[in-house]
Amino acid sequence: MKRLVKLVKLNHLPYNVNRDPQVYRRCAGEPFHIQALLDGTGQARCRLTDERGASIAEAEISLPGTFTHTLAYSEPGVHLVTLTCEGNGHSFRQDLRLDVLERAWVG
Image (cartoon, rainbow, N blue to C red; front, side, top):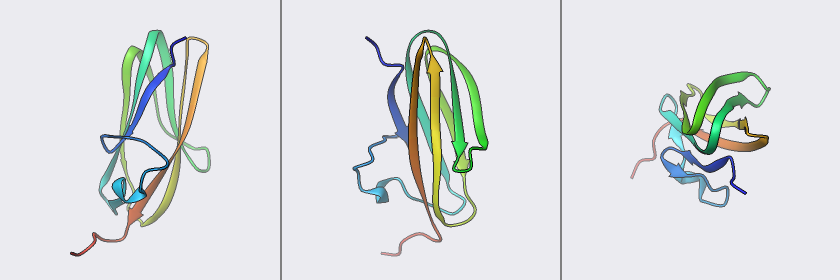
């Protein structure tokens, strides 16, 4: 059985919750690049929502294909977004932690 989502990337790196979060961090105003590589045939609906459940982005993707969205936060802190993909009777959900720094590290 094929999985609907083959890979989730954050800032062009495979997303792994066990990886050091420093790898994915961005400064305020710098964009985060979120990608979901989808497999299968037909159509899939992908949606990105914030921690309150408000929709950030939504797209209908022809399979196989890639859902891509870029977003930036102007204030530092931790932001949670949820990627949801549904298609071919399968569904996928992944929470992504987006760490925003006030300024870049010196040194």
